[in-house]
Image: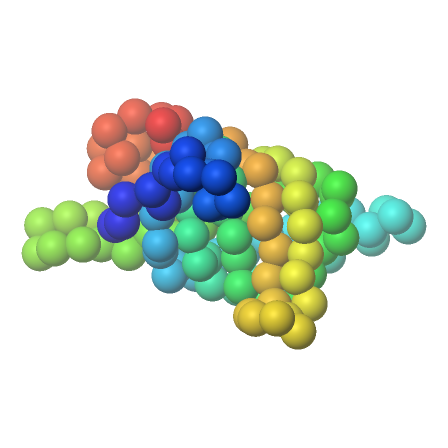
Length: 129
């Protein structure tokens, strides 16, 4: 896992405004949302990065900005004695990127919770913080 982007105070230099540390993580993600007509949409993708407050998912099927979304992320086991874990979260889509300037995907604010006692023991608590 990586460290946050450096903060800079120089004039004209970018400033990292995020309040949570993001980690680069490529893990399967399954997500669903309700369309304006009430139809439930389901899709899957791969996480690009994740924090305790948000996630970016690379995917072909994108929910619209502003819609409520539920997300399941399957965290792989790391190391011989580690267990895999599943996170479940609910939140709101912030933006969807069509892929012209990069990979298609969407960013969402999401509060994640461990789905099982095994996941909670891997993460150290029931909520990712």
